[in-house]
Length: 485
Ligand code: GLN
Image (cartoon, rainbow, N blue to C red):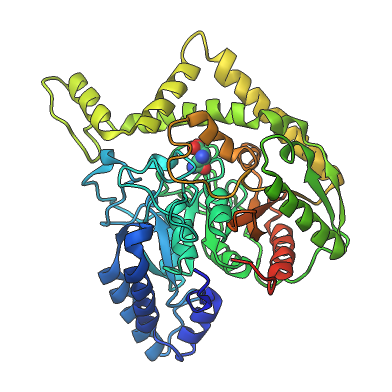
């Protein structure tokens, strides 16, 4: 880490490739060399698509030579979380149950990246079916944090966050159901954005909890995250939850600052459970925002205190339904047995890991006759309260601020045996998923252990532009400060 040369800005790469000053093949070779050097110890990828990346790069160079413009991400390597469908290329969700399955189509985000000239570098590791906060729940072994190989990268998009932090690709895509882009971004010292629900098409994202899932960018800088979000955002007729309005331009106004904005620090997310060094960084961020002309005050969003409890009923309930399709018939793995029912059981027993089984059982229970009202129904009511409390807060504030993760990266194995402690990693990120609102994690210095701390900026639905402007103010304040990873 700390090698600035690996942090080539995506925007600069694209400009150089479009202008014919650099070849896409050269860019891809450089990144493959970085991968060859550190991937064995980091394990960010389930599969590096080197041959395909080289072929795609050659095509981009031919188009530039022919006088064509390959698009805003021309020649820029992008790492894809391995729950995004890629036609004819294995997509595993880091689960044995999808062994041997080849998606018949590309996810919309993958199509859009291709149309923008980006180069897919491979599929990144994740917690199985995106269930987890450390990437230790992968069937293919954990990813390690590039800043400290004894620590987790966060999760579930830990492979994507580690790939960006290690310089394997200047951009990556993740998915965020309860924090899975923002929490690993925070732990790996990169920028991660969960867009407004519906902003980015979920077509071709393998479903975990459909009312919460959203795809978003991971990048070393706010500007590159904004650039990637511009490319993937926008209406898609193939996703019925996709927002019809055109998405705004994000990069152009990024340096607008926060002068005159009202920004609230969420009191309920600054208390018990948040490590003192993380809290201090969020307080420092609030001071920077105030210094830049924002009116910063404490905000109250009382119902977020129940976010974690509601999420761990709603997300498993939806997961238990979504994962019913892995039955040994339609996808991937089949473990043969004398009858269909015993084959289903044998396949699911062998194919799913412990955390996925736990979620399916929790969700099935929460939805079962006699318990539905008490658990799932109650959780939906809490979700409505969270939506209302955010709406009330946004009458007084333009943006909210909190920690992204209550701690910096923890050692591998530290929470693996205790699911409840692991679930607490997402206490600050889950509320935005329940509300459907956007949020970004931006690196803001380091904790007492020298590891990255992320500050979360939350915004009302569709307010990504303002949210990213505030993130850019924090990023600028850190630029040049000693000790920044
Ligand atoms: N860590 C949370 C969970 O395990 C969130 C996961 C996610 O956002 N995909 O459910």
